[in-house]
Length: 289
Image (cartoon, rainbow, N blue to C red):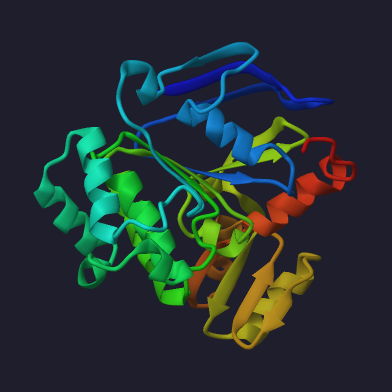
């Protein structure tokens, strides 16, 4: 487990991180969410060991044990004059992987056909894939992605989603920062909302449910009559009824009036809704660069 306790980092004229405390578990995917300048990239840099904190404690990070961390901070650190193969070979040598791992990684990121092409000749999407490939070499136990979906087309985003899922299944700790909340929501387990250099909310995405549900019934008329008798205000979309009550309560109500329930699912609050909920109070005046 990686743990940050009251971590602070000073900037030139204001704090970049303020008393950040969060725990990162193996086999979990964390999404860093917040406005520009909130401190997300700085937090990733701290986790990667690229900057030294001014106070607090960071424990459990692989670099503290002399192990490599997989990190993608855009494509700016890729040497434009090197080929794809040379770029991967250099990283493989650094993390102690053999040449066969380079071919395997190139196939994994969809670049095996362009191993001889120089970085300067790659499209933006290919550069992102190469940066991700570099990060994955050496099977790191911590992988950090800063805006990894920039430059990826829809197929590329679907591929990235699969990569993240594979890392989770392998027990890797993954932290992803992105402004694409709809896409981020599909790949993370826990939302970490950052504002003004502080972590203001840590919430499992799977539990971000509202006390509401969506019910599909066989006889909507009879069901709606029962709903009205109980003073509940529904929203009807064909045979789907949206109710401000739990799924269990809705099923009990349908059984009582003899209506067949074809399907029922809890209504979930989207990551965007959670972000908006926090932003009302937190993001009105950003002070972190």
